[in-house]
Length: 230
Image (cartoon, rainbow, N blue to C red; front, top):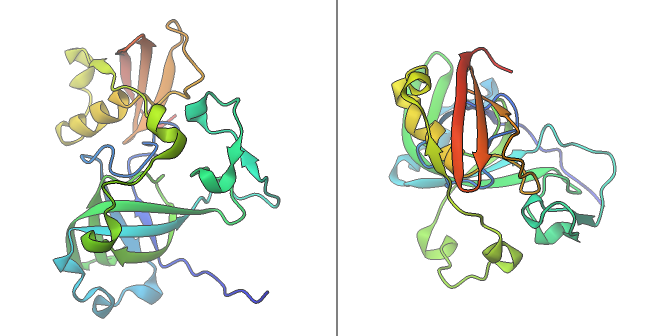
């Protein structure tokens, strides 16, 4: 079959230098902020004409850290404990025949006159810093909303929202503008679903910080916050 080359039109700048801790779906933590910077070839303000009238956009992007030469027809979703296999096309696993992701994010603003050309500011993204973006499309409420849609196996595996104990001494180490986003990420339990050791200390890189935490039942406790990416 004939195939067309996919061109990277932009990259996204987020607070996640690694995959660990990134929300499992877009829109779950709306307070997460990100910026989309276009490649030089696509820094044309005309390409964004009219986009400011939309509240949300779709991002089509590459699982750039999950590219494999071979694919498997089944994968093990973490939300099913990592032991149950499902068809790859029934999941959003990054390990696909084509490593393409799809995310819906809120469009907070557009700046056409930065040193990097036009920049889109978005919230609710579930992408790692530097992720290549193939395309951007407007979200259409009349066509893209399906309130009665069935969620398959995910309806029973969405997980609970954890209580977050964030001691003041550690919270003060986080820039004020990022505290809500970080707390939201932690509340949605960054751990793999099959890990449940209350004594284990987990580490997560976020916005140039190292966040250490434990989880006991439905309580997540932040143990430390230090400068420097992991």
